[in-house]
Length: 194
Image 1 (cartoon, one colour):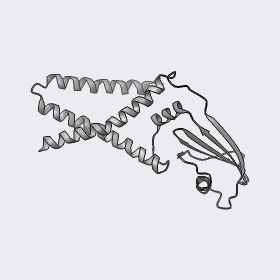
Image 2: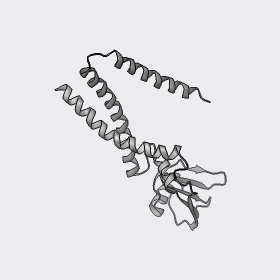
Image 3: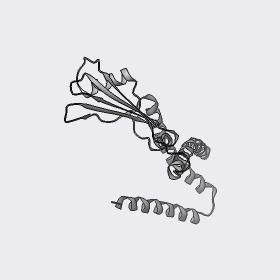
Image 4: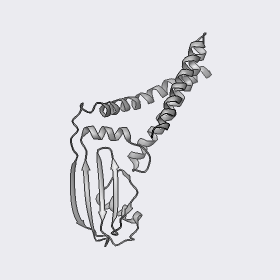
């Protein structure tokens, strides 16, 4: 009974991981092989608009107005209050970025929209992380968390299945220890880099 449950866990986590491993392979391959897809400059469009906003002059209120009025999507970066009194807001998601610069008087806004081409969009998916970018962004982040959990469950269930199915364990234990040693030494090396 326990064996069958562990076997199913191993199988289902493998299917879930497959989609994310393929996504990481494709997006990582594009990152490593820069010549594979043309690395074109993004398309930028800037416009200056009158800001018809009479609410509170706080970063959260400004951000809510920008999102509702101009349809900004993606993960909002921390707002920057500049020395001249203006406010800078930035939103990013794979394939697009939005910037808004609200004047110190709060009566105008300069909006810059950036649309990336395929290569940079794929790289954006590869580097996507964290919560707080809207519903779809957060669903993607939950899937990342589930993929991490699946990876742990896949490994532990695989070790259990291997131990139950194999009579001679010495080689398996040796490979397991070597793989942990390799991972630990790689992490240690990366931590010592300047």
